[in-house]
Image (cartoon, rainbow, N blue to C red; front, side, top):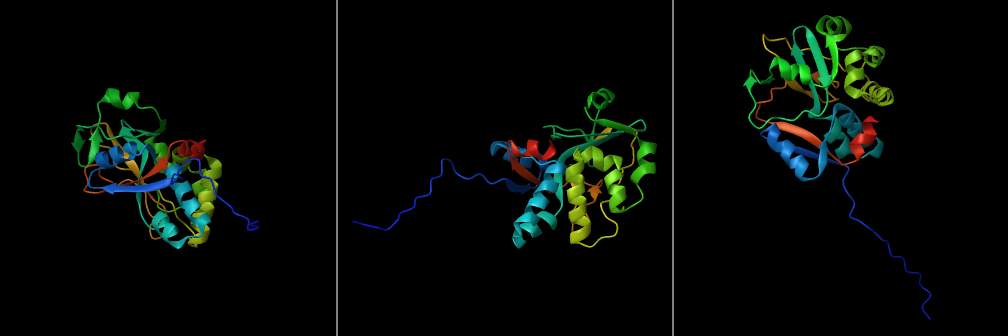
Length: 224
């Protein structure tokens, strides 16, 4: 009689990668590729969780991929008439009206955008003077609005300031307001050299886009 113990592992479903990086020449094509993979575009909060998970893994290539590159986010910012709106779920229209690399809106389209609304003067006073201390980041109305989760913002700020030994980091910039309503997608810059800046200089008609696709159901838990 055989006495050797045999062990068989059982997988009921293939393992799904939590994160996948998608890149290509046009944002709209990258968005389509993410949707075909049944994934959600990562928000700034999702990108933060991506970086924190990479750190937790201790796997250097993953850490370098997550922290060493900028990523386009699903968050957006819109400007008009002294108001700044910030929201989520940005998607490139199929035939966008563009000017200087930004999406041009009608006044009605701007009014219909669902997001948090701030006055431009309020934000200029609060956070538009370059890099901030960690305490300033945690109290910043834009970071709070974009991330939507105080615990996640705290964890990310701790990692950003401690891992890279920054005294100041995570700055935010406003694009100048044009004489028409406009909308931009947000970008989370790399955490190594640019210290996780929310970038205002990303052009939607640029020649390159890079987003993270998150497995369906996981992104919701990140921002809950």
